[in-house]
Amino acid sequence: MSLGCAPEFPLDPLSAGLMDVATAGPETAPDPGREPVAAGQVWIVGAGPGAPDLLTLRAARLIERAEVLVWTDSLVSPQIAALAPEGCESIRTSTLTLEQVMEVVLERARAGRRVVRLHDGDPCLYGALAEQLCCLADAEIPVEVVPGLSAYQATAAALQAELTIPGLVQTIVLSRASGRTGTPELESVERLAALQASLCLYLSARHVEEVQAQLLQHYPADTPVAIGYRVSWPDQWLTVVPLSEMARISRERNLIRTTLYVISPALNAPGNARSKLYSASHNHLFRGGAE
Image (tube, rainbow, N blue to C red; front, side, top):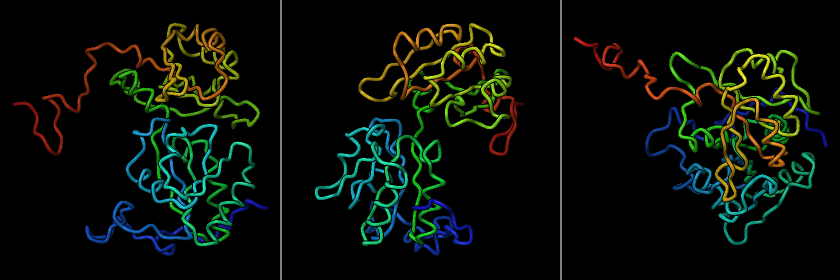
């Protein structure tokens, strides 16, 4: 089965039978909670970082109305999959190739069933989303992508940390170690580290020694690093250590998967850091400046 994309077929919500939310009135805007969910369509849904109550309302409603749930059981909480209704066909994908997954999705959608393809986190991050969209476009099957909360957001929230501190760091970079898949040369960890931004590294625990060495070329050794394992799951483990201890702690905990690293000077920001946006002396459209 080919996962090639046919660029001449537009993924247009209107041609797919979906309402354009930007132009819809309050009575016609699509709402999976009110309107019947169309059959013969696929939803690629973000399950968030793990906790069921961190699903978006739209994601939860679609899962509750699914006729077929195709889910990444190695990464998505069974509690989330359990939200599917009685009689829903539940298909686990941890042992399947992407081609096999898409064969299942296409077959069920062509049979007129409501298919929810459930991804961990946000489908737009490291979820093979592009290949799946191309395959569905080739088959002329309507599709909608539903975003999900990502692990870096859940990690920052759990730490009660802001990753963009005025005067310290204003950029967040999401990336990964090169590993077997590889990354473009311009996006190597070493090059990204040169920014000294808030750097969130997915899929990197297996290469943590190499990653730490690359980071130390640009970040000070005492730069705080958040190490998060299965953040928001019942067995969550989350700590903040100096960059110099990143590899040692990871190996002591035997972390090789479902681990996120957040390297950021913002994690050690002074408590008196203040955003100018809310300063009384800051003029903007909705508030005049100080007298």
